[in-house]
Image 1 (cartoon, rainbow, N blue to C red):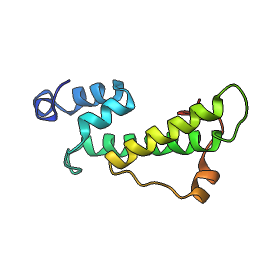
Image 2: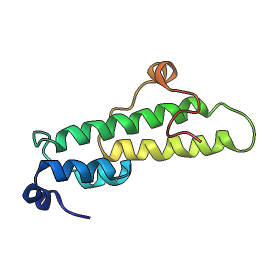
Image 3: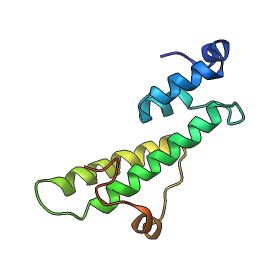
Length: 110
C-alpha cells in the first residue's frame, strides 16, 4: 500500500482514483493521521467516516430481526463497527439517531 507521501508526487487525480477504488476499512487505514486540510485526502477521510457510521446504523437497526442467525451476525457487525469508529475517531450516533436514519437491511448489515 502506498503511503500518502508517495501520493503527493503522483498528483491528486491519480490519488483520487486509487482512494475511490479502495475498500472502506483499507481507505481509513491509509488515511489515518493525514492532515484534514490536505485535499483530496480530507474529503476521502470524511466520506469514509460517514460511510462507516452509516454501516453501523444500518447493522444496528437490523439486529432485531429474527431467524437464521441474522440478528447475531448484525450484533457482531455492530461491535466491529464500534471498534473501528473508536479507532478512527468517528462520532457514535445515539440510539434515537440510529433508529431514525439506519436502514433495515441497508449497506453494511447482514
